Amino acid sequence: MPPAVPPASFGPREAMPIDGFVSQIGKVDEFLDSLFPGATDDEIKEAAEQLKQMHATAARVFATEDGRELVEWLCDLTLRQPSFIVAPNVDPGVGYALCGRREGENKIVWMLICAIASGRSQKPPAREG
Image (cartoon, rainbow, N blue to C red; front, side, top):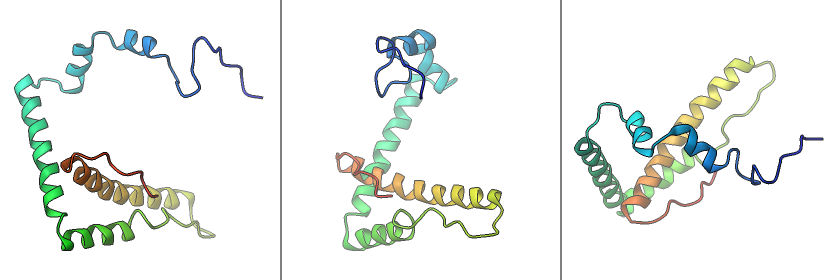
């Protein structure tokens, strides 16, 4: 039987109450500064603008029939395939390495799909795989 979780401290999908998390990270500005050490506000804004432009470019490029066909092909090669198949007599380390490689391939295609959705001002679709 799993240990009892105090209902006043944790919700069903919360590993840590948000108040506890915020108190541990301190001020929000300090937390953001730790994510982008040494970056000025202008540099962060410029990086955000570049990302927005790349999302718009992805949406424009993949709005064509050829672009849609290419995205479908990439999804067929990655997201719509099993991550890995366990074969007998394969070292577990090799299996983990293959799984990690496949997840990396999946991540690149998924980032592309999310960029297209963002460029169209849409929410990304639910992941297929």
